[in-house]
Length: 431
Image (cartoon, rainbow, N blue to C red):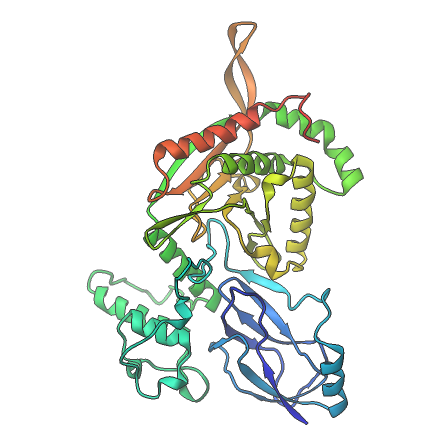
């Protein structure tokens, strides 16, 4: 029997996806749970497995086309027994990871979480249900995302060239049309001398999505920046004394990061305006502190989230960060690991950076980077006298939304983080 295959829902906040690549050809045999296609959402790039054993008969959505979650994307030929077994026994087991993550778009300084419908105020309508007047001819054939973009930019969709199946217009087609129009308008001022030796490279779909988000974050959020020095000398000694014991006892790597995560989480609870979002002229103060930790994944930078991070001590955060790092490097993060972040911490110091200005992880209000810990000469007071000594110094850098956060608020926040880190002594019960 032939059965329609729908694009599965992978999270409440994910409403549509771009078909990046079909992994099976027409008439190919497909095993249950075998990767069938790759998709790109506004959060992740991932593989979607087949829900049945059978044969791929037809693909209804072309590569590069945007489709809503739950829409029919293919037709498979399966046996009646497989269909009955599937619908009696249920769907994929709870412990099965739906797809594997490759490139991820919601990254700290190089890509922000981007979901206009993730925050909905009471009595506020979801953008998916915006009423559009003067619809184009045959508007039923366009996805809601395409119609929204056309309405927002006052486009005539008859002027847009579709690259999808049978000329269907996708969200990417509309974005490309808008970008080409912008390029034409500014071409007189932006003419480049391109030689035969220059390479012209077409960005990937994911890179275009990241570019769109970065432009949105940096154009919509008035970024401001501040930095402060923190003496990490005591923490460095604590790490050297305890890292082997913690690794052998908990299989976790003790670094500066869990100390910083703990200090940032406590400071966010105290300074609620930093843990917030600007939405339609209102400030949304987040109740929970859900700390996103930017880290390298197998296919790119990811930002898994530690929910209610202020409830955990340094050792607990160390274990959680180590666990998330292992999952990120082996492509075993679940979508829920990447959702609901309210603030982002990026440990750029692990890459050798000593100072940086990160782009805010939209729609959050701020992002903080922890830079390299560097030994250098500092002035310290010993027995009431000032002496020159060697200190382990780290820069904390905060990018913040100036609509919500003033310079005083930002300074008070980083001062709180600094005070928390520098107050740690050998007697502190943190491990």
